[in-house]
Length: 137
Image 1 (cartoon, rainbow, N blue to C red):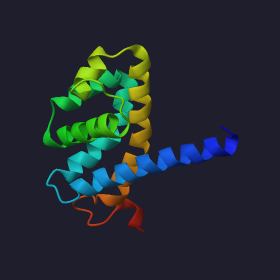
Image 2: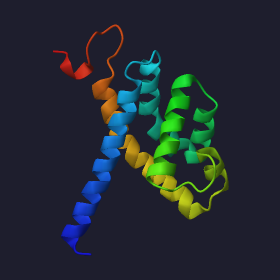
Image 3: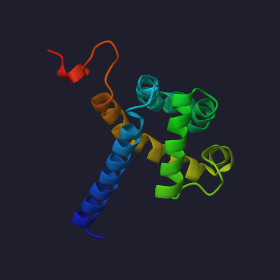
Image 4: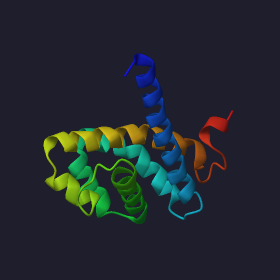
């Protein structure tokens, strides 16, 4: 595969991540927990980098409604879209997979989170402010 083909392939992969992250955020825009969701999505990458994917997944799996929504969306992405999960659940996969797949799951999760954070910032308003941060003068 030539350099141009690799660039096209990378762009297609990034576009797929962006599209799915957008859909995930759009799906919660009307939910009562959307602000928690926004806050949680923004915290995930640092949590993963500090504690590892397994600890972070265990934490969000057993947490509030917003975290559980994130868990289900992430599980869908990694299992159905990327086909990186061979077990029944994401939690089962991260606690039983080999180190190569664990690194791949972590890398893909962090790549998706780059887009996910951008969309929650741009699409979910902060309560009490009445508008998104980037629109304030």
